[in-house]
Amino acid sequence: MPHFRLLKHSSLSVNAPLVDRQPPESRVQRRRLRACHECDWVSALPPLRSGEKASCPRCSHVLVKRHRYPAQRSMALAIAALIALIVAISFPFVSFSVSGVGNRIELSQTATTLIAFHQPVVAIIVIMTIAVLPTLYLLSVIWLQLGLLHGKPLAYSRDIARSLAHLTPWMMADVFIIGALVSLIKIAGMAQIELGISFWGFCIFAVLLLMTIQSIDADWMWFSLEGEPLAPEGTQTGATAASQRLTGCPTCGLVNSLTPGHKSRCIRCHEKLHSRLPYSLQRTWALLGAATIMYIPANVYPIMTTTSLGHSSSSTIIGGVVELIQMGSWPVATVIFVASIIVPVGKLLALSWLCTVVRGNSQPNTISRTRLYRITEFIGRWSMVDVFVVAILVALIRAGSLMSITPGPAALAFGSVVVLTMLAAMTFDPRLIWDAPTKAASTSNNSHSGSH
Ligand SMILES: [Zn+2]
Ligand SMILES: [Zn+2]
Image 1 (cartoon, rainbow, N blue to C red):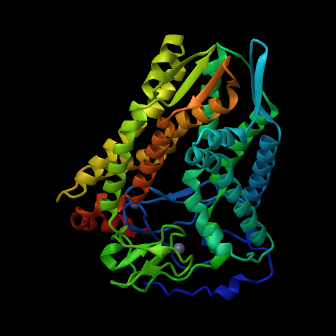
Image 2 (image 1 turned 135 degrees about the vertical axis):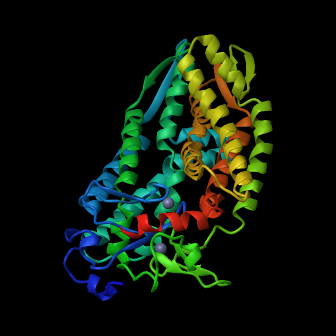
Image 3 (image 1 turned 120 degrees about the vertical axis):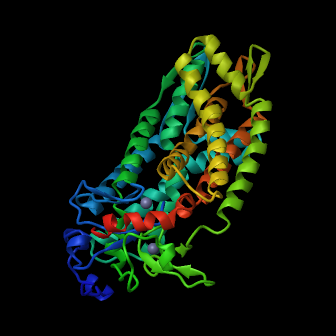
């Protein structure tokens, strides 16, 4: 075992700007160990150049992605995204007119109009996912990087950095853009549409927000904020963390030791630690059950009611798809069908299947099951498209008896299906997929991964 040199916290808080220094691997002489968050395998991080990433040797989950000048880059992108968001909320978003009567809306009205129709929960979901959470995220990034660029982390940096990862899945600006496009195509035949400055501002904001999220080099950020405490003595690569009474921190990646029967927190970022997420299967089943129940009213009740020249008609989710097909908008019909039917049903089935098979004694196809879980986790938020379509159309199409659209009870039911299935994917612990075959695999893989 090589001689390890402990890097003390104090050695990091010298005055030179932290980000101008070399990346973490060139600042410590010892191996930096990580326990994979998806399969629990312990491996040592290789030295990385910018643009390179280190993946788990067992399940190929990305452990670290290295960027050049991560602090400057994230800071610049976050500021640009925030400016685009300010533009997006300050100008008209889109306007429509039919037979001379029209309406022009601002972005915030997509949420506030829903409150007028007694849909406060849907309004909160919309405003949180498209504006509030992204703003919090961007301000957090700016706060963190500002501290790092000045060589001294600002107050609450550790807590803020920890919350970044938790916010990420709930930001849906990109999904909202798709919702806006679907809405516009839906009404393009019936009314004249004009896109405002805010529409383009929001498109730019959505792209910049995605780029900001991509630009975060969490490994470098945590190293710059809190240094890197040593992994517990005797930690071995090429075995699972659980078999060594260790666990990898889900937020900063550090390998921590666990005391059985005690609630542990990460020594670097203070995140709660669990060898496996507590009651993972029970919680996932409960959320899946609730989502399945909500999926019934989501499809039975109308999602919106259109009134045109005194005649009103309600449409369900599937009814909306049929209408679009009759209009000849095959691409939009496909988008709504995939987002509102295929994705939620597929998610419910995939997670139920994973919850069932992880109880088995032997676990074949671990790689493909992990891949299935990753897809499930990734696509979940795209189901929100139809909820955003309702929010936009209800706010925009308000020309009295000439033409107006009101939300139906299915909007709330369907919104909760999306949130519940997202939570279900989060409570499922993918490490359970790998648990049964650990013994057989650890002997055959030891030689391979130990050489890192
Ligand atoms: Zn892994
Ligand atoms: Zn941590």
